[in-house]
Length: 339
Image 1 (tube, rainbow, N blue to C red):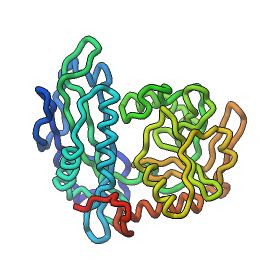
Image 2 (tube, rainbow, N blue to C red):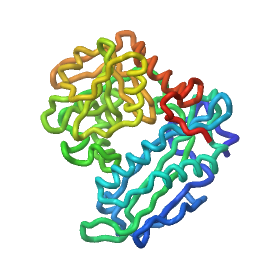
Image 3 (cartoon, rainbow, N blue to C red):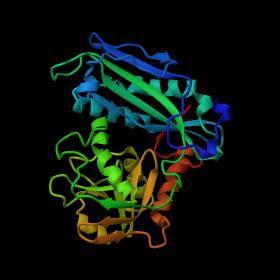
Image 4 (cartoon, rainbow, N blue to C red):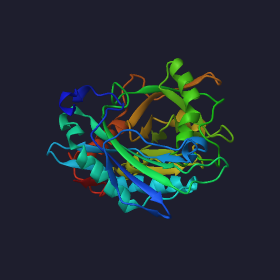
């Protein structure tokens, strides 16, 4: 099947591959990694993941370089973030080394599905951690399943690296101020579906969320972190409800290495007026430059691209990070694992 794929026209969707990797936590310890060729999971109907949301996941990518080598980007950071999510939902943490072993195993087993270099596509890796013990009362599971599958994907946005508009909708929150916003759990995404659909129906790429407590500070752009550029400074919000993006963390380091100042702090929404460029960042799109943000309630529009094209700093950061991921440039930060 992989031989018949149109690599240059892949969507960001699920395509079946050959194998996935699984591991069970039972009787107080994690077992050995298991290879499976089935794409279904047999679950008890009272499993805690189904009823009480004991579920966390990750997303990372593997890339085929011009030299034919396969590179996996920052999987140690994803392993640590999954552990953070597990702790936040009182789930058993999956060991970092076992996580990395599972990623490498799944990538190697499905190597024929890694898109060729010139296609601009990549292999998306989805680790999942779920509670599987049957519970009727609200309490944590005693048993867990770690599952990791891969699928080839194209750009998250059909046009690739291009600007898109966002809209501020104050009647919706992505997460509670001291809730699960800092964890990568399915409930946060389910909670965003209604707001996201409304934004899409209005012609926007997604919702631009303000902080859930006061509606005064910038929170997230849909399911991505926000950053703004001004006066040779990379500014990105900090709060108790933002998921720490590994892409954003990488961009902050890149910005510093390019001689920019980096500020990670609460960012008032009124500061949007001062940014020369703005973007949403995450694993799927890397950077999605923001054309404008419309604040309908305030009858105001913050415009970051008058010609509809990405700004120079967003463009430079995007191409620099992609060059490291694909092996076109040296990796001075030790982000890439070559297999």
